[in-house]
Length: 374
Image 1: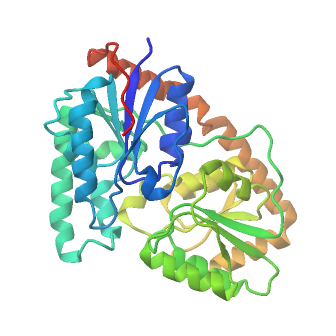
Image 2: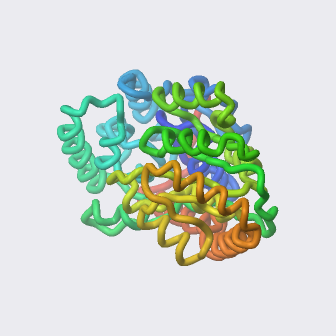
């Protein structure tokens, strides 16, 4: 049965790795029709020709109302023309309320939203407790009304029911380039909570060492100022956002990859996808001691653990890997082997597609007309 599925985000870059390169790719490969509603224009992104695109405003910072209104109109007028709606932002749960979609809605839970509020610099501190309570209530409502798909096993404790987990894994090639001795890399969103200050301070300590530091990813307003200054100072190269395949090309052959998340509630029970991506490319990991990252790097002997907010320890780890070629080679090899065996996205793609197909059947899936491009 060929399904028509509406995938919707107003927050994420339309080229987001989980949404586009993993989930949508899996749906297309399974023969399903995908309509992708996302902020293409706001991000300057051209949609894939295989999807039916719908351009939405972007929700950023406190500027979210226009995006939510547009998403609400979309779900009310177009949501009933598809077999299933897949939402990727908690904000979109508000847009789905009253849209008459019944149980044909799936919320892909990417993060611990109430905990993530602590890391939202645009939200005044005085309003954060109120916002957390509101989000918890919204999650309880969503659990009663919609289907939930979790990106982390640790998210299960937030909900009363049992919901399937499809980990945010990565594509792992059969063979990789051995780690080199010239470049250290970071791939991912850049914020203070994700260690941008530690990255820059470590780059300053490494200046004159002959090593280059490549950072790939979008940045919030604070991180942009920090990174532009560091880039101009010659401490590092900030490439901005790149599609996942291009970002991974930069990871290939690097000395190490950074994952310097700070000790915040949203990260304590999450598995950093960037750690898996470095492992998958055979690159040693330099990570802060969050539980999942510690488990990965310790069990698989694929990286070095550094204290939180410790630029000197980060710089020392980089120099150690440069000066010990056998160590970095073994870490790269162990990491790649583990990622290929346990964290290769194609091994999970079938489960993801099967969950959506099953929910579409229970929602009364039927043949419907294609959506138009707006």
